[in-house]
Image (cartoon, rainbow, N blue to C red; front, side, top):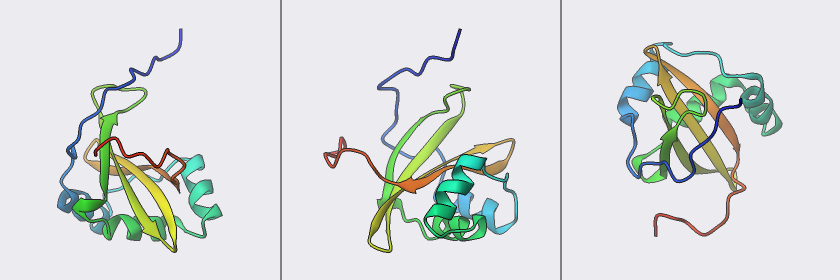
Length: 117
């Protein structure tokens, strides 16, 4: 039996303070992202380090939502949307075992209607 995602389970405030995230990145407390993240970032012209640099430039106003991890509902992931090079980029991450993990870095393909309005 597969893992079921519970639609609608999200928070409108970040789980992780941005300063904590930035400190983890600056101090090298990171996991290497998965293959899909590396490929999507590479397709946009970004290395892992450059994707991390974009996270370091995030501002609180870029926050989109926080939702539970697909496999571990006790771990939350924060999602941000940021304009980079004229494109809206969807950036998602979590903290696991005291380390930062980038879980998504891709072009934002969501509906233009923002649920926060």
